[in-house]
Image (cartoon, rainbow, N blue to C red; front, side, top):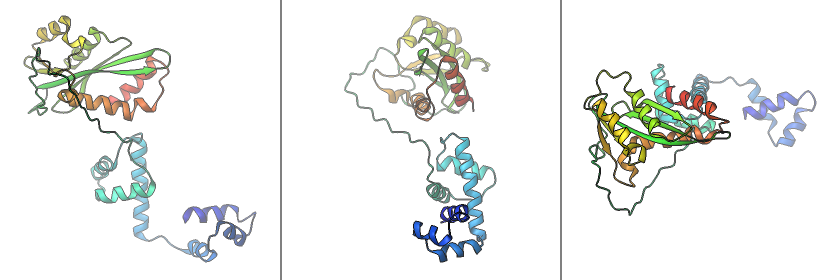
Length: 263
């Protein structure tokens, strides 16, 4: 209704209110009533919260859904329920970028040549006890496929080390882990989980882990659930950032990925 009233106000200097209301099939009585009506305190509060919700949603680049927006509001001292946030978002027709659930079905035999020490136990009592790592593909217009190797701490679920390059090499995989080790006093005894990719099963990668005292754990062949946390991060990265942009070159992609991971 507010939009219709604003439209009439905009064009009533050129056309009569009666004519505009007739064309729009909008009652004149409702228009005149809206001109003199005063918003209630409840409506003012709702409008204020809606502006805050939209601001948080825009600043998150449409990534935040109702739970995260609710958390941000309560952190800033707003007293509002999750259900109310959901209702206001529905009123404004805004929502987070949907992430489609991945269902894995595999009939491949289990590959037992490498030890799966983590064995889907992704809980950790403290930081720097269990890490996981993986490499994902990022496409650019000029430089073609590029590759992001990342390391996640399973306690904080944060990316603590990453490396980005134009080739999927052993050096890239090593660099990501090396960066994760920069702020760690001692890496002795940390368990690092990865898939069975050639970079991670190479002798160079194993030698690097051995030099740091890191214990290597492997997923079973063809089963992404064994490395679910880092697989989930890569999936969300694609669906909430990468798939919504066409990066011109390596540097443009690197800047965007750095901003997403760090902020």
